[in-house]
Image 1: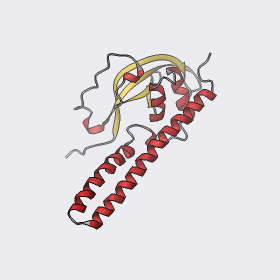
Image 2: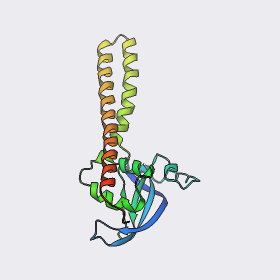
Image 3: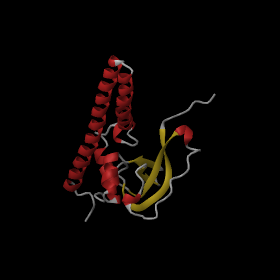
Length: 188
C-alpha cells in the first residue's frame, strides 16, 4: 500500500523572465538565471494537479498568490524558492530580477523554514483560530463550559501565533528593503 506524501514540492509553471547575472554561490561567475513561477503541491498529488493558468498580463503583481516565485540557474540545474517576504518585495517592484540571487545569498543565514512558502504553520493557525471559537460556541451551547473555555483559550493562542508570523513576515520585508537600499546590489 503506497503511502501518501504531503511534503510540498515546487512544480514548474512558467518562466517569467530571464537575465544574466553573477552567481554568489559559485565564485561569482556569470550565469543565466530565470525567474520562475512554481506551484507548491504535496508530493503525492503532483500528477493529478492541473497547471495554473498563466495570466494575460506579464506584470509581476498579476501572478496568482497561490503561486510562488523562485530563481533557477541552468548552468547548475538548481532552483531556489524565494522567502515570502522577498517575494512580496519582488511582486511590489521594489527588487529587480538581477538582484534576486545576491539578495537571497545575503539573507540565507537568518532564514527559518517558516519563512518559505507555503508557511504551513501560519496558515494552519489561521484555520484553527476560526474553527476553535465555532466549536467552543457549540460546546457552550451544549453546556460543556470547561470544553468551551479550553477551546476559546486555544483560539486565542492560535490568533497570537498567526499574528506573530504575519508580523515576522512584515518585519523581514522591512529589514530586507533597508538592506536593498543600503547595499548597492545592481551595478549602475
